Image 1 (spheres, rainbow over the protein chains, first blue to last red):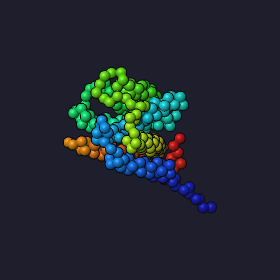
Image 2: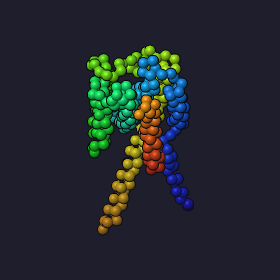
Image 3: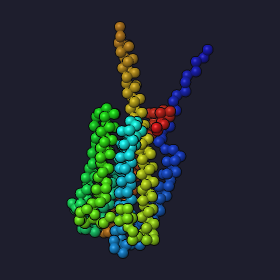
Image 4: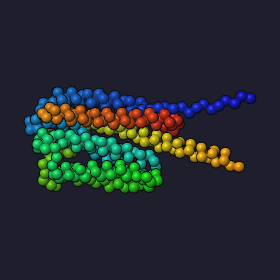
Length: 252
Length: 44
């Protein structure tokens, strides 16, 4: 009787799927459209002049960062409730993308500040609260790298992920609560109510594009985190099996 | 630097950073996915 060996496990060396490919194509098309409108079609603003073109990057990146941090908070609550790996990895993935977008918000804001205020940075209320918010989420990511059991790490970071989101309304309202240099909060804190025509369209296009980018990055980053956990488990299982085999060979 | 230079830096810097991060994720994902059988590539 012949013995048929089981087929080797199939490997799919990618984290993409049809949904992410569609999302990716939409994001790229959106970026091209945003660049055409933001850099060439929209006229300079009556008050801000050409510097409004920097705000077409600044506002969408901060909006996407806020969404990312809220997703982290919601996933952290869900983790503390359900205690499943899914919510922990989703929270961590979203926080990392949020930090990237928030760093870009600060970068764009500094460039805008240099043109408008003559300096890259001033310790005024909005920028100070922004720094605190940024450092809080950097701390969240740092805590996730501290050696600990999976459960402890996930629980501690979930608590931080929930507490950190409180900083968002403080940062958002800083322009109302304290006097400073920063632009006042506008409608929903995102789009200027006096914007019209192609300026308004470009502002909303930017928001849409960066939310699509966030979603695309989140799916891929989450799947990478998931795969990394599985790969680590396999390495550990193999090491244990090798050690067991060695001890069997060594036994008299 | 001129205003145009700052605008160019903002746009290029933003999309270059996002592209670099996306490329890093994809490269690491391919490496990790090659170690994990497809049956373990269910995301929930």
